[in-house]
Amino acid sequence: MVGNLAEAEDLTQEAFLQLHRRIATFRGDSAFSTWLHRLTINVVLMHLRKKGLAVVSLDEAMEPAPEERAGRSFGAPDLALSGAIDRMALERAIDALPAGYRLVFVLHDIEGYEHNEIASMLDCSVGNSKSQLHKARLKLRDALRIDPRQEARR
Amino acid sequence: MTEDPNNLSCAAFQARLPELIGSGENIAAHPHLQSCELCRALLADLMTIAEAARQLFPIVEPPDRLWEQIETAIRKEQGGSDQR
Image (cartoon, rainbow over all chains, first blue to last red; front, side, top):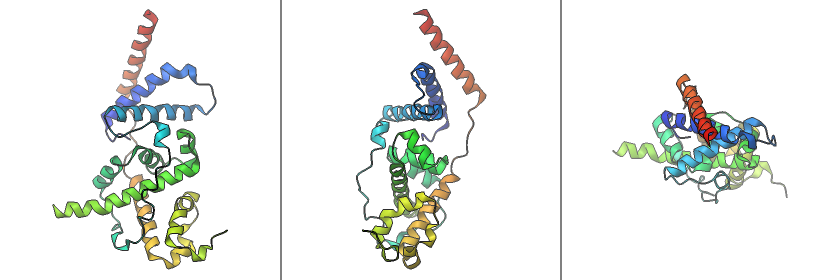
């Protein structure tokens, strides 16, 4: 989520400290792993917000985004990706995703969680998770179609 | 009203894509894709992105010293609260 090993280590420590402080509040309403994931994701979102990034609470992050891209993806057959994706360009594009999209994308496409697991972790519907993932991939596609051309002009 | 999968517009097909992809079914066999190059290209791109993402970040195990740091930080915090 943060794309940086040192920051990831700091956040791991903070998550375990939070766990230690709040373990008594775990009531067993959900699986412990779900509770811990949610706590950890909140730690990450708080950190990103402190860094001044346009981040939001977990609830806000998981609200369905406005249909800003509706109808955007069709009508452009000449812009398909060439097949090979530049790793750096993909990392940049993931970093630039809005928090809600990035969360679901990282959890599903990078870490391999299923939609029902993500829905439990983020306290959203399975449909919302699928929709956020799809929008994330569409945004990445847009970014990756533009990026190589800009690079080529330099 | 049920949509005829053989006669979907691109917009209607793409509106159903998140659910179709998430269902794990073989979307490549969907009737719309048999006749629509545009949506085939879109789907191929989305799958290429998902595949590239899977290979992006290696799973990194936290180093031993991190667990030691965490233990120290918890002890320190506990010590602080015990003194109150």
